[in-house]
Image (cartoon, helix red, strand yellow):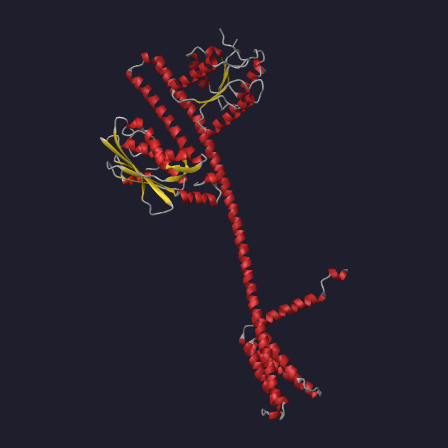
Length: 151
Length: 417
């Protein structure tokens, strides 16, 4: 059941994908992750279409979204999610390299739930991702209709 | 209807006459003018003699007067006096009894004087009229030159405006380029760096047991360098943000800002003896967070560069004003100081006057200070000597002036750019 994930990671950089998975793996959350590599694929996953048309249509408990993505970029994905009645309740955390005020402003305007800048320091990065995973996928009570924690 | 559309024939003739009239009045050569005078009188005399020959009576006076009037009109005052004298003489010689002599009988004297007075009056009227016309012509010419000048200036202004608009567009484009450059640095440059750090740390974690001391030190250096580069990128981006960010200008109490800055540095000054001397500071007009950054940079520099002193002395104050339009503040320390020879390099980006082992830092603090102060319309300068401490000065426009200026030109948030 690789299509069943409580955490949806949208990240184009393979290294970042690996590092994120390592970080989540430290809290044994890695097996609950679905990785999509660009905005289009992320939207396909959320709308259960294309390669994801067979998955059960619960929403992920949290979405970690990079901003700079091929095809459809992160801000467009965010806007799409937050204007869609069936998706707007998904907690979205922007996880990006960008410190830019412009990006922060626009993300919050579109209704992002959290904005995290990827720290350069690996330990800090691991901590940040781990805490994000723990908070949103374990501590936080997700909106009804999201995937429940697997036993 | 058709005669309304066609220009009346008289107009063309009138115009030609007016032009001819003007051209003649423009004659400046004295020979021509006096020649005209003599010719007119001779012609009039001939005409009068001819008319007399054909038994017309008493026409000589109007004919001579006409000649005087024409001369006055076209040749001016000098030739008209000549014409009066000539015609008086001719009149006397040819028409007054006894004819062909210059003698005047008493009974002809009133007649003679009346002619003289009449001629003088005509000459005077013509001269006045000429003078007025001359004045009008001059005024008209001046006006015309003025209009031409104005048109020229307008063209010039329009050209400059176009140039300015083009330059503004260019600048806008450059700014956009710069922004996208900074954005790209922010996104793209940092990612490989993070990976460098992350994978080095992973490697260190996985393989540290199988690595010897030398290899471990290499790993450590890779990590340190990558982190340092990360800091450099962050600082550079912060510096470029200072130049691009919109400023929000308000009245800011520098005294309050200094208090906050000093309080925030408490951690660094813990366990050290620092003698703070904070003088009265003015209220300035500017962006609070940026001005705080200025003070934070200067004061933390002072704290950093006095580290080797047993007793650090840091003084923050305001220079007594000679210039009413700006206020100058200073931050003085008794620290490492610098060689005045390199004072020009002090405010440059990534310029450092000390080794990284002596004093940490990226050399971006003072560049940031300068950038912020310039954006506020102020100036920065520094004085110092090696091992004798340093003093950094920054000036800001007088708050009163700045507020007035804002009120006058509604440039609001763009003040000081």
